[in-house]
Length: 156
Image 1 (tube, rainbow, N blue to C red):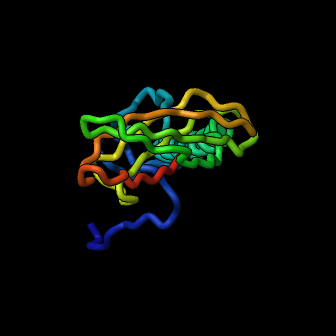
Image 2 (cartoon, rainbow, N blue to C red):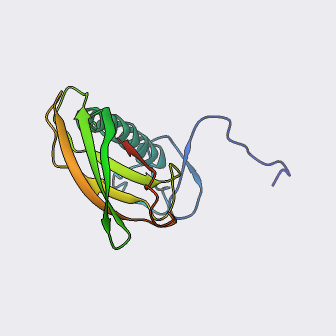
């Protein structure tokens, strides 16, 4: 031995089994693959993974634009009527202002504040540009007896 270490300055792959440097595109060294059977190199494997990820993100983006949600939805409370037993009937008009038929997800909030006691409901498909009316029964969480229930609605 001359005491110096040989270094590889060119691009190379490494043997899958022992880690020795091999030429680009060669996955195994001569010792581990004396028959020189072809197989993918690490460069080829990683390149395939990167291409798969890029194609996957492109397909996901295309699917997201094709399966977009409908709306926007405009919602208004038409009436609130006490029905006894601490419940209030709430009538809501929901209008689909979008360009395609879609279901609305609506939240009725008591006192105008979002909370865990909110009533959430899903509408049937509302055609584009049309309005549907829904009636929901709410149990008054904190409203004093004899006072009207304050309710806010938000649909998306």
